[in-house]
Image 1 (cartoon, rainbow, N blue to C red):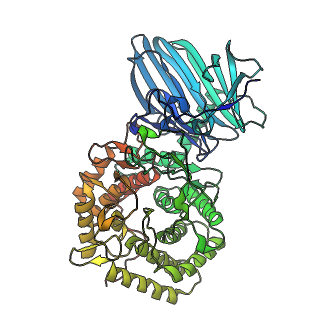
Image 2: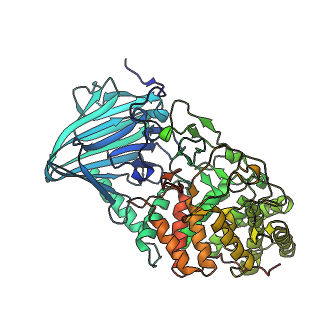
Image 3: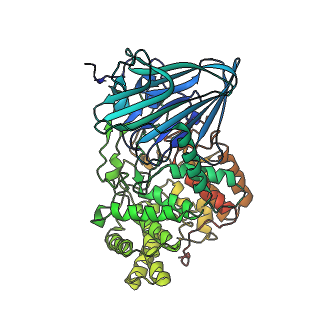
Length: 626
């Protein structure tokens, strides 16, 4: 009997994956997401969840690691694409010498099985098409056993083919015959569409021990998906100048939420490099407390309180237990252990190895996360969410721990793998966490030792101003005694640590712009400063979230025209469908890092809000100057 087989894919690559990351568009079902290129190929998909092993991993190797290409046979076809209105339904149109054809890609919000729908429509002429689905489970390592659903080999063609390997099973249903290529374990269909004709493909995933279900009708999936996203985006309350840009970013942010738990992943991918050919390749398919809190700010600021409620419930469950063991990130369901390993059979995007799954940074000590978590819970309360006794109990426990540990060095928000330091941003966020507790008592009637907390906040504030500020250079520094800077310093006035008109704030903003900026891009920090801070070889691109922070900061210090010019410049670095990655190479402009990146999308939304009339500060009052 034929069976699934494992294979190593690290031999010579037929076509190493090196397409620009800007070539990708996202579709998703609030459990996972697929990335579609302009070639009509789905080159990344993990099922059944964001953090599951990929069944299409061409993005990190080549086509032999799994993909699904559906496109005209013509080599010279002209392509254009766009999302349908304010939805996550992607439409790609090819114009060939023989006619024009359109492919509509979507994933209906999940009710049972993960489903991917591809609908082909002839618009003019007569166009020859090919669908080539190459399943490779476990990140390209496992070829499935492929058979027709009626038990035949599928070699002669069938409307339904099954691919099974261990716990994973996929069924492909098509309106045209699909053939099984036994040599390649792929599913192939060749057909022609004329004007007015349509052909649909529906791929559904299930665990192999579960019974198969009838495939979802393609038109029903389309109608359901369109209705869901259209209804969701109507709740958006943003009415400023960048409405289209904000709505598209919010849709992509929503696509990064895991519906069953309310968790929010940092990105849909793993191991897309921060430097081409470099080793800074990390798995972002988890829920960072910090990223989720920034996302919460964007969602609450645009009317999405239900997402805030779901996030608060996820947070309370995820961090329940000993506050001393608060992690910087968790799995989608609150899983704590996220062991990091390397997949040596994959060559990596553009040859950037290693490819990693899991993330060892989950075990790092990052002091700012306590402050970010307390800030997020406070924001939820400010937004009018019904008070949660368990959430307040959690906040008090986190504050008790913070009171005894705020003075300790940590790894900082950038997860450096070098020595722990007294990072200024970390200390400021410890202050912010205490400040939120004080305000919860004074403004919302919560109970707590507010006098003790005020003294604690004052102690932290005094130390940061004494040890973290370089008067000779007129700027705060990356850590106590450092000569380096940190883009996170731009956040000090935003969290209320100092007012925007404080000369130390203006000096810091201009220093970061001068020393970390390049043509509007802002690096997170200088990895070579102070003899090397992050403990890793190589360099990285400019972090786009930091560039949005600079636009906010320029607006905050009154340089409004400069802030708007920078914001418009940053908008130009999204791709044709509004996707934005983690970083950009400041020399070439090439997109780098995992995508779509929640941090970057959040930066875009919040900067648009601020430049539309809301001053970029948190809701707290800044303390008196020291």
